[in-house]
Amino acid sequence: MNYKIVLGSKSPRRRELLQQAGLEFELRVHSVVERYPKDLKREEIPLFLAELKAEPFIGKLKSNEIVITADTIVWKDDTVYEKPKDKKEAFEILKELSNASHEVVSAVCLATNDKKVTFYESTTVYFKNLADRDIRLYIDNYEVTDKAGAYGIQEWIGLIGIEKIEGCYYNVVGLPVAKLITQLKTHFDYRFG
Image (cartoon, rainbow, N blue to C red; front, side, top):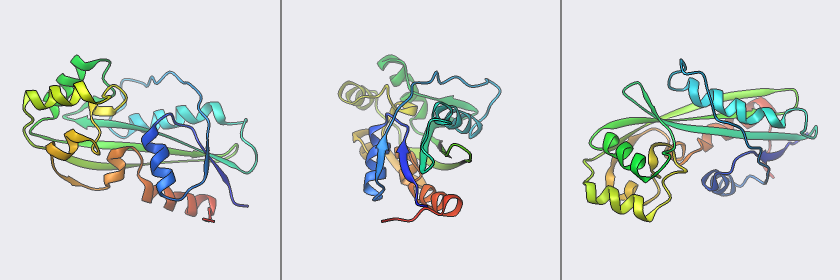
């Protein structure tokens, strides 16, 4: 049996990445309160949240459906940087990330009604020193409150501010696509076409 894929995410970037990878999918979203135990660290946070986002689907999927849910965080100096609540917080986050490296950790949960597989990917991102005026220009012209760490690597701030990355670029966009495809093939015998 080849599974029909359901994407359980509001993220336009995840939708675009699945389309670019040639995966056919249906979009279905359930709202969940994204809270996690405060003792969780690094990859434990997005792994917990990716599973939490999958829970409303379990028991409601058809037998040939698999849901993909995901979560992304930015991790630096034992601190998690999630989506900023406003432009002021976005500015503060980008100042913290400026002239330093941080990790972008994305976790994915693949679930059917009776099987669940979770995994994560980590990428190290190096920002050059960002001028205050460049940060302000970015947060005034781009939607920053829907992105972990207040930035999109594929947007202007990524083009002018990121010196290098170590690891998967698409993971920083929000979905480690190569690893996702491998997990679908390995655990669910997913076949393209």
